[in-house]
Structures are given as C-alpha cells and as structure tokens.
Image (cartoon, rainbow, N blue to C red):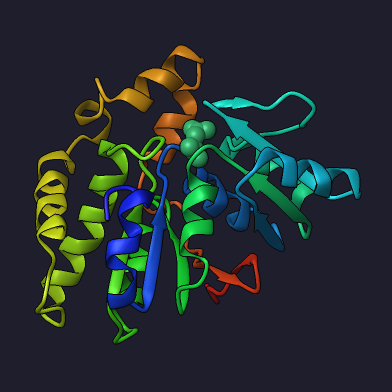
Length: 233
Ligand code: MLT
C-alpha cells in the first residue's frame, strides 16, 4: 500500500500492518525505543499533541520537516538520544507517519518498520503466520521512494522465505525497486523529494542515519493507542 489513502482498499485482507515512514517518523520511533523510551502516543493532529503538552506530557510535533512552534522537539531520531527521554512516555505528531498509524490503528497488529529495525522486524514478521500489509506513509498521500524501497526490502525477505505465496503486484514492484536501491540507498534517493526537502533544512545527518539499516532490534507495536517495544533483545 503506497499511501495511507489506499489503505481502505487493502485493510480487510491483512491482519498485520507494518507502518513505514523512513524519513523520518518511524525511524525516529525506532531510535527512541532503542534509547530507552517507555512508550509513544502517536496523534494525527498538532492540536491533540498540544492538548497533551498542556497536561504536562513530553510532546513533539513536526510539520513539513520542521519542529512546530511551541514544541521542544519534532521527529529527528537524534532528539530522542538524550538522557531525559529514558523511561518516559512521549506524545508525537508528524506530517505523514502518525497519520498512517492513525489510519491503521484498528488492525489486529500494527507494527513500526524502518531500515533501522529491518532484519529484526523481518525475522519477527516471518514467524507470525498472518497476512502482512506494508503501509507506506508517502508524502501527503503521494507515493515516495524511501518508504517503498523499505517495504520492498520486507517483501523481498518474506517472499524469499517461501511461506508467502499470494503476493500483491504492488509488493512485487516494491521488491524490484528495493533490489535496484539496496547497494546504495543514499545515492538511489539522491533526487527524491523528501531527501531534497530535508537536505534544504540541513538535516543530512538525519537522512544518513535513517538510511543505515539494522542499527536497532526494536519491535514497536501499537497497543491501546500507545506504541511499546515488544522486542526482548
Ligand atoms: C512525516 O511524518 O511526514 C515525516 O517524518 C516528516 C519528517 O521528515 O519530519
């Protein structure tokens, strides 16, 4: 599913939804859990995040790549690498990633995917014996390359296990994009729209970090409206 807008057409066929927003929401979420955050409450609107902040929650908000005025942090993975976040509950809203989490929230299992937790997630998914949908967050309901190649990496792994015999055409297309990109994600995405957008905001280090696979072993799952890490590693 290349955009949240397509989700309605797919949702009844799948029990697990992997929400992907490589640049940067789901990467930031993985980094946050890797750095010891206890839970994240994803919310689709800035207004909801603001209400939580007024109640004393640690709340972050990003729109169009930038921290929303009045908030202390957005969704740079590096924001969450601070001591003050360890053991905390955080509220987060982002342009597309938290919107996808909201769209998928009624699925049986919602799990967060990114390049950062790719191998661990692939191994976990392969053991679930359920139908799996990768939901790419895209950009404002448009296709983007980075989420699609990450979804393609997941599809490639699952297809190779031989247990997934019925595969959507969109998954096959994503897999071939991944195979074209896998030797140099940064180069492949050189002209992609959100890479350019973040580069113009001097967020090159965020881009490099988010495109470096397997830096974490986290498995963030949505439970009762909160993301928690169920990985034991
Ligand atoms: C989003 O949710 O659209 C992104 O994570 C945007 C960003 O790079 O901050």
